[in-house]
Length: 549
Image 1 (cartoon, rainbow, N blue to C red):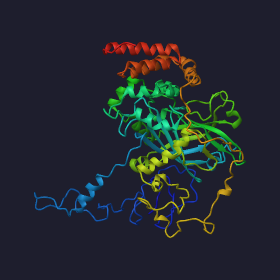
Image 2: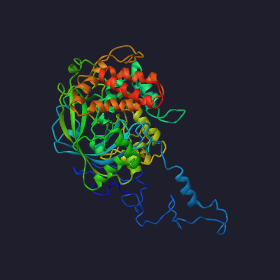
Image 3: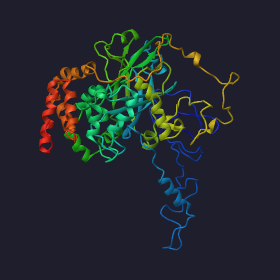
Image 4: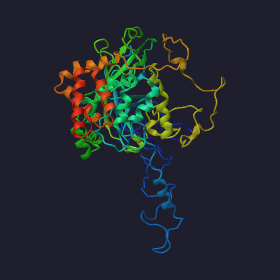
């Protein structure tokens, strides 16, 4: 069987066999189409893994007599256990679903390409950036965070913006969000935080008390900047095409001289930012809960390909020491006047998946998927994600998730005889290759061809159980205040909408003590903001029979 695209990718890999991993030494710059489902390597299969004669069979290849017939005793007697065709269908139906992502369960995806438009080889030596005009095949998945698979697109929730680059040096995953900051900077808090964004363990309902009780405690008020973004206008994008993406974390990129910088990535929509109000979003959720998914698919289908311009911010190690906050603080942005945006290239989405489950639901993104000259920084949340995301894929899809075609490094495949066996190993398991390495092994290693950075950070200290945040300080409110006073003040009604969105959500709390903590926290951003929130919560409380604040 060959693996190829339905449209433009004519030759992506060579013939697949059980003993040789598929490979292809070069990809045309216009290779922008999807990777198709891979099934058993049979000559009678077409490029989609479907029998050419289209005769319906059981999973072991036995042709069906008829799709609606069942074996039974007479016309009205009981069924026979020997009806393997029926049992095959029913048994597989019971196993169609795999565990949904936790979080980011609800999402949409499309294939496309990244094209280099500006030279950044002084910053990064990765092959994907080595030539202006070079294109790299991509898969991008957009998602909400807290909702389950099948939940509405128009909820007030952060959005995920993950892109897989099928580079000649391996697969690179940018696992980003649609906001430049996040709620936490201690990775140990991530499971608890996500629990508060989901459902109450007793009622199985979304719970405003749980949400605000967690975020208004002193040690968790570092989330205030993210909350001001989330409950502002950008909290509900109209479409995935109309939102930006951000790395949030600082990464470390190096050039081929061994010089390195901290880098943040910004992916800015070329379609313009468009958002819904809370009231608009609620109405649309009842009418068309899949509106963002539908919008992305239909626009690509009719040739209206969405695009984003990719920028980077760069910072030297010396520059990071001059910041009033840590370069590893995920709750802060880098000031653009000090660290201006530098253009890199274009991300274009121009092909819908041929099968959503095979190519989007089974897509496995992990920030640990890196390529030479791009690596993680010491950001503790990023360090935690390096393990957690890849391990989530092992749970969802299985230990051999990178053998699923959409996750496979398709340019040259992969070769590591130590990574073998396990459930659903379908690549031939490296045949008779030895399953160990030693100095006599006849394998090639290329570590010497990838220069190690010459000037790494130096870390020295005892191993300690360090909690970064015991209570949010004034520095944690500075950027939220700047957002409210310097940005939202220039947008007609934006400050009032922020207050309204917070108040209408916090009014769902049954505890007035938690509501007061919400008011107190936002008052540290700006006294007027806190007062506006208090006034509206009190009004809603009064109308619903709860005490005023």
